[in-house]
Length: 239
Image (cartoon, rainbow, N blue to C red):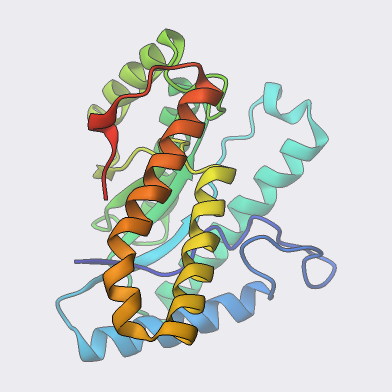
């Protein structure tokens, strides 16, 4: 069982104080490492067979001349790489549980190969030669306009070949279907469960929930097909 702690803590990292309008982590790098240390040590003590790791890094970038042309991308790459190194130094020096390194990447197959090999090089340099890389968010052309197109399918095939023949130990694709529809469904589920439970009780919620789930799934599938211009297929519905 893998237990990953957090998600992209460096996404909005600031060197001049706490991040403004943070999306994934609103504290400092020190705060994040304190969280990771406390959680990983507690979990390992209670469940020693768990594989514990993180930090689900945005990526590990190789700052190429092309990437350096964009000031934003250059600064973002430097920030993310610095956070990865600080995390690895803290794990090593503090002897904190660390069974796998997780990272994300949304570039081309060539970018992903360079990023994952750079991650392997950095891990090795900090003494983590046996720690596997879990590449658990990746997708070429992650936009609704590109999802399902032949171009994206070809890039996915190329990236799979890169990953299979590269340094990554495990990879999970991100299908980019999580959009505003999924958020609406999520908050709708929360609101429905609260209202039914509050006014009719948990038994009523348990009875009505299957119908609600099917209705939400059907509405989401219909809207997604409408937005993508595809045929509605009932066999795609799942509860």
